[in-house]
Length: 192
Image (cartoon, rainbow, N blue to C red; front, side, top):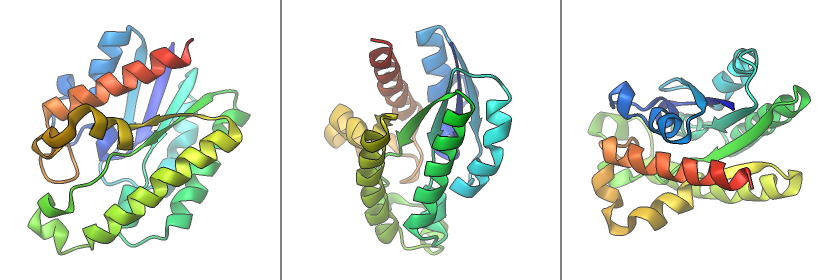
């Protein structure tokens, strides 16, 4: 099986050695090919424009997770929804199984100071929560597979979660290990 992971810095593994990024850890554990097409700072519109490149790699599935950067720069949540929906249906049209990843919560109190001056991260956190609910409804309506990192990460980590962020948005190596565990568990459950 081959999965292309299309996303932003959370998919790319910002600030973590390539061998410790969750996509690499998941590939090693599952014994399948996982191609990391995450780009730090990318928006859902950028991901939409790159979807054809991901599909050209002939994967059985494309994992799609993004939208937080859109919200950071002040884009409307409707823009994110529209782009995620477009990517999902375009993948289906190419006979590629879409899997939507729901981004984890952000931790506004620990966002780097220069980033915190750039955007209202409390507003972004609220929008990410709304997005979480929308993705679940969208996926249930269209019978699309999804991985709920938003809820699962919190269940997995509890009060430890704060210690796994390096900057309120991105994870350290242990956070990437947990992302990989959630991803592997979900992919294995899809095969049943």
